[in-house]
Length: 239
Image (cartoon, rainbow, N blue to C red; front, side, top):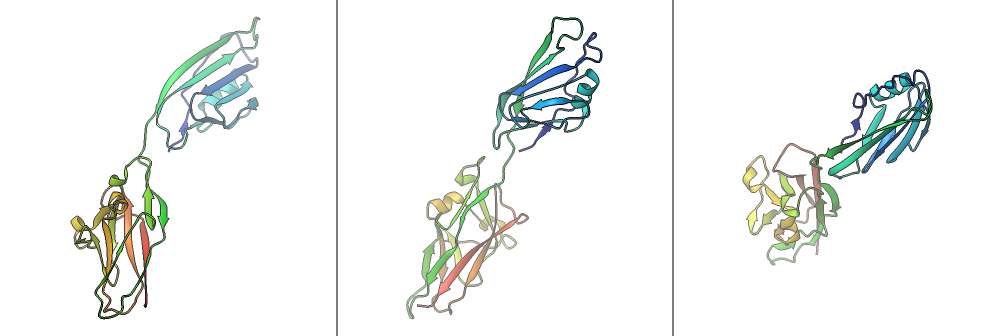
């Protein structure tokens, strides 16, 4: 989510207010306004809220409206859609009376941005080696042990890319081994939906001595080897 500075977006004039004090009221229907008062601006109330008020003469107010980050719109986290900016500037009777107010409403649109997936759970798995001559031990990777969430995407659109496979054992999607992306990107991926539907398995050969391992992953909306990595722990215990 990106903040938006209103510098240069508000222009006004009052031919007879001269150096008299003027009052400003600004409001937004969604999000908040962050005002950093410049020299000559007084009476600031409601900072970092949806309704702010302040005062100053024309010179001070023009400086406030033209200063970078003097007034910043901050959207609600993960919000996208339409809003309205309301503006009132009153001359407070300067000059002459009566006091007059100019007002304007301006519609705006908050465009959605692609938020990165966020970690929900990453506890890894713990398995017990079978007693020889028993065969391999198969364990399901469930969403109780690995979950990422994304406000913009469904579970089927959250993509895990395998960067490094465990030193011992194999990871499979519906019976097909997952390879490291540097070896074969096409078989290096699976999704959160695959985990949710219990399609992911880790298979450990019981003939091998117990050894802990890790599954190193990149999580995103597309297959990629070049992003922040997540380590999923795999613990193997002797019987």
